[in-house]
Length: 370
Ligand code: OSB
Ligand code: MG
Image 1: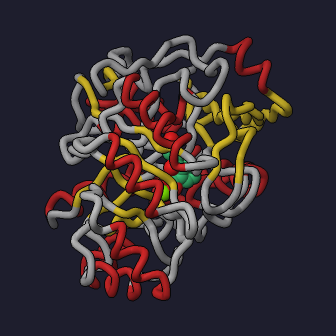
Image 2: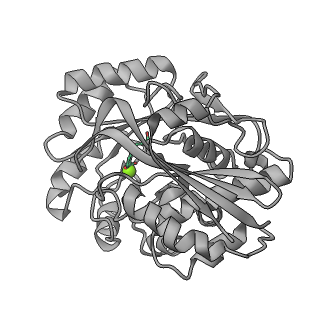
């Protein structure tokens, strides 16, 4: 498969409600849609899920789109791809920039799935059926407001709830949510807001039967996370730390975590994500699909990945109506009994709504590879 043309759509999509984490608040999601076209006219779509501000990882929408244009697309010029796994290897000559790599690599998986006339889910080794999904809830003004927000999502059918926490907005919130929903599958995500000095708070959180505590400590730390995991029964889950299979092996060997939040964008694409899922499964680490406030293309890639058998814990994958007034795909993704159905059409299985895409578009670039 020879890639002949790329289009990058730069989008700004206002969120229905601002999302607050220990890093700060986001009210507009900046993203890019990467459309690739092969010599034979096959089209593939990928989503660049960096953010406007580099607080989650170093990349931003702007830096990543520059890397795509200046380095990743030129690397594909004249290469007759035989297999989508080749892309990960071709991009390994460039360090980091995982989100930029994933945006292009996922589009190529879409093209290969279409070329083989299969839905992406089965092409990736998953299956057509229903996947379990949960919701990630930002930091709220008070525990009482939080309880009401949780109630709304539980009534919509989400089968697991993740609460964002930070120092000062943690134990009391969890206590009240747990008291109101004694049987809810509940977890917390600190986005790296704690240190060893907070051990007493973390031990208090350990008492609320949480499914896991995500990324309490530093984004490159494996040692302190291992120190914490020895003292609490709640599984530690790593998110920001995990950029490759090597990072997962490090976490496993040092016993820094029992669970991995796997995001396609954070590990440079689907080939690396599948290797990580396989490693976790073989080594009894829980692996589940994380989210990046994706629009419809990124969500479709997540659904396809999460349809693999390793994914037994509900992913941070939401319905179309969760983040935006209107999504960029024609297909409506809905939650039924805590589940989302895998699309059955070939490739990512969803269709871009071009007028809606253009309504969010602030810049469009066309790159011809010849
Ligand atoms: O830490 O998992 C995270 C969103 C943006 C950046 C980081 C994270 C998140 C989420 C939201 O938790 C997950 C989602 O609903 O897409
Ligand atoms: Mg997280």
